[in-house]
Length: 322
Ligand code: ADP
Ligand code: TRP
Image (cartoon, rainbow, N blue to C red; front, side):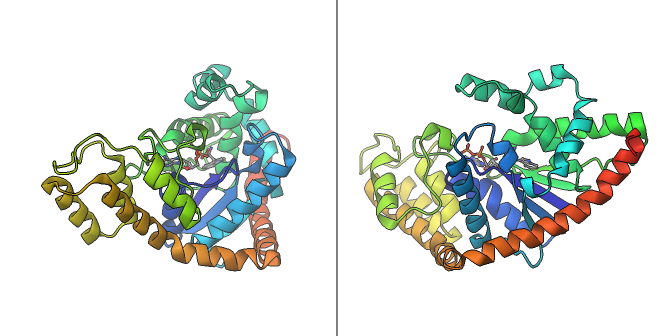
């Protein structure tokens, strides 16, 4: 079984990205042959500075490796190292109705947030479909926000198969992570870099302390009163970061009352620091060895191109290009 997912290098990673995307991807390495890539073509739709694009790409590679992506088992590469993906995107675009792209939530959201409605942003789902279909991917783990893009992918694969022969493309299954579907940000809304409400994945202890103690929202329940569990952002984050017994203890303390949010925030900070300690250390090691990242990505690119060539040959023949 081939498992594939991509992450955009569009900013510093946060805890929402980690639990929503990276950690599940790392766990899935046990289930099949994983193809994980950095979607740098996609990031160009929003990141306009070459320096930033390069830096985010590098950082994402380091962070993904530090989080447990094992390049011995999985194929890890840059999207742009396999430019053939653009050819498949073109072929897919010839069967993709404009009306389908006009309905894409993510396009409408981005335009509403002030991004210029470029053709690249509009055609984003077609390139994403090509990413997936180019590698005969069977399973695509993504966050809830990508559900519609997966539907478009399946639809385009179906259209190609119908027009040019069954078996031309493998129709992938999405794997939508419901449990950690939405990690709340410090203000209680969805954690997202575009909302400025993130807890970064690799904050220094001081930065993390400031963010948690000063910026994390809590309600006005007095110290002595029981704290409502429902809608508690603090508790939701703690459930992700702390162990079972610690979570049970915090829940009991919430119910009992007599402990203020300041104390609960300290526990959250400790859990955060402890949870990411090992990853931080591994990250420092990787950063110190810059040749390592290049070598991993070069090896990944080679394997990805070989896999892509098989599919692209099949598609070129099916559609009459070869
Ligand atoms: P952002 O919203 O910060 O711009 P991206 O859209 O770049 O993040 O998301 C990258 C990946 O992280 C996607 O797979 C997305 O589903 C996941 N992700 C982002 N924010 C969250 C969140 N708050 N909770 C769960 N997953 C998230
Ligand atoms: N659009 C995805 C995101 O923003 C990133 C992505 C690009 C992707 N190509 C992909 C995810 C292919 C899965 C499969 O999170």
